[in-house]
Length: 392
Image (cartoon, helix red, strand yellow):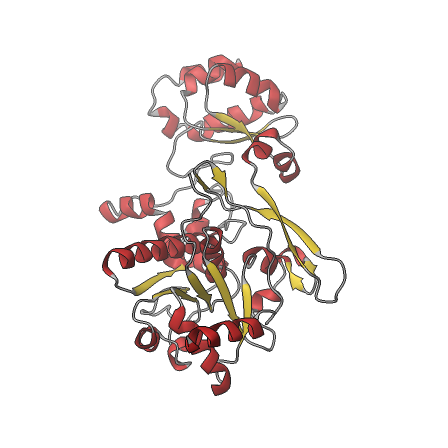
């Protein structure tokens, strides 16, 4: 067993902004890479100002703090020749470059893949866009809700009584960051074997399409298969009753795949015992889910869990956010970590709680208490470091 991390010694230049690109870089940093964030001197990453839940700490938004932890900040105007000298020196030493500008912008700035590969042939050049570099959508704004909507994902949520329901977190950005980080690590492994650098590209839309691979594959093979959302309380357009979320007298209960007739016997709902043919779990889905909803609402969640857990029925309570973070199950995962940075105003250090990387190595969780950088905080030191390296 070793204390080193898989990407120790790797240098990542993060030219990206806001969420998908920066989070991919953070994932690499969690794995041991050194991440230098390249930011505009005026304002820096726009994520410094786009506040999640309106929360701002020490002049930067909570979103920026948590998606740029454990990074250094290098301020450079990519339209200023004097600043470009320092950036090119970093590019020459980088193992990975990440960018998420709209297609063509990095090329106009002189840092497209071809230009970078001339400086550093072994570099892994990683790009994440909204909708890819080709096609009629390539210049549309690459934003999470918009990518969800173009992918059709909101039609999978909710019931037939609801309008399209988007996922309530930035799922397109988060999934894209995972795919980008995965592609980068694969490209680094190839470089270790062959010495070849190369490009890694993904987009918000591709991640959203991949998330729906079952549905899209089914429709491509049989065009009659379309999304037909079920009655209220159903949780999946393509799974039969009793799959869904049901109200109890004090909360909600999720029930996954199980026999409708056996469930009826367990919970004392004789009405369900007539559905002995599994085909009726589809054809009578509305009647089954309505009967379940009415019956389960008569008792507390724990009452039903006691019965169903004892029979090994697949079920779970639907926790609220406070219930989740206070639960022993959450605490057992040891998912939280505290990050710290010195205040820009010279006051007390800023401490923030966030989540760690969701993987372990050799049984060890990956935690780092280094907070997000102030804009340009490391520019001077990095310039001196790389000038010295160039002189050697």
